[in-house]
Length: 229
Length: 229
DNA sequence: TTGGATTAATCATTCGATTGATTCATTCGC
DNA sequence: GCGAATGAATCAATCGAATGATTAATCCAA
Image (cartoon, rainbow over all chains, first blue to last red; front, side, top):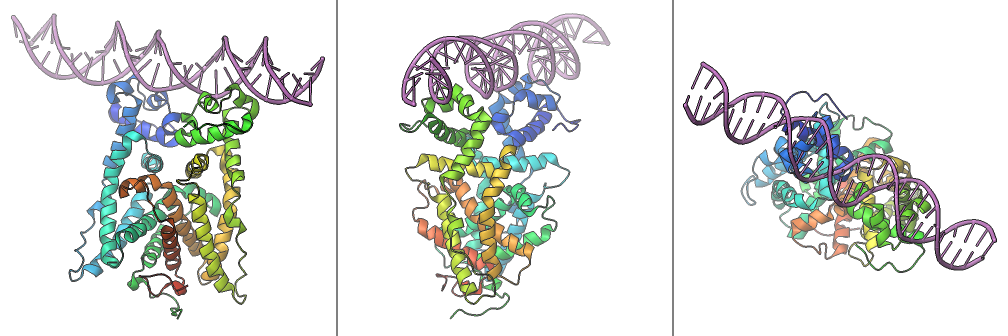
């Protein structure tokens, strides 16, 4: 709980300590004295630097977003539907998207970066039941993911209406997010605290599952095709 | 927050009030006075009936599980692989499973049963970051779902190894659970607080998406319309 | 009358916030 | 160039409110 927090200015130390504690015990379960102690700082500095506990929490969320500029937003643009080669580009873009999104969620898992790990836990909880003050921040952060994925889906399944496409997107994102959020219980079920040992295999599973689920014909050539007449 | 809690004995009133408050503000964010007040009871009765706040919380979890015996466990048995007709039965069982699981998660959404709705929220949070004392309880509850789904998957994809089947199961469950857990944010993104207006359509989407993602040949043709079933 | 159920009152802690004093580097007056 | 003044940063101490728990008295049906 109290890794040797050596460097940095007090404000940053408070922020990182807050990430760890908020992730471990939630907003209400964490006291500012607790946070300050781990940061080798005085609890009054929470009010001084962040205008109180709630302000600190909001700054924590902003810091988490700032720490890792979303990898997905930097993927190649998808040519608009109808453009020659658009479909092949979208197929490639879709695979890149899932891989990037998955690795972004899993990046700090099992690594030697406890703050990054805690940040992900904190984010997951905030998405599920957001503090009222942080809803706008969350929405703004989610947006690039939604639009990027939607762009791919529109090209890959131009026949679907808007609501069907939306459901596809939710399912695709959902399986990945759930995998990350429930990793704790999943490991208990598997009886293997180190699961997944082979991350690349899991990534490939999510890509395959999503492409097939989406109904992309290119992904169909599968073992034993037999029309059901 | 305080619907007219008229009937029942004090113990039950405390339990239901606790479900509402714990779901709304979490364990640490909720005070026993708050709970007792909504239940028209004295806060000291929490210690008397439940041996304190933590005891009340554990009883709340048990009460939630007891309230709704899992619908999925009561589905028809799947004949073992190899048995004639096993595949068709598994296909049907799989569809029934997803429908039952989805409706179980969504049963209290938008209904006039705020306690059931709160129970679902509370469960979701507990699954994601379980209180240490409740891990055994959760594992026991999850078990029938895992085994039931696994049985179907083994018959439908006998060519896959154990880890691949497990990934399939996690993805299938995950999309549904995520849909339920993130319904709040999903509605914000959609800009429609009443989403989904047509639940049956969403159920059908999850069935189709899962069958295709799983790679069941019967679900392949006509990715644009309904599965041939 | 007995015993479980319920009550108001109080317990010691802990909470987030605030205060006023102190430290220290920078800047300004001269 | 040097002492005084400035203002941000940090500190120990304390505030009132709220926490979970406990107690002793009271209520009431059996």
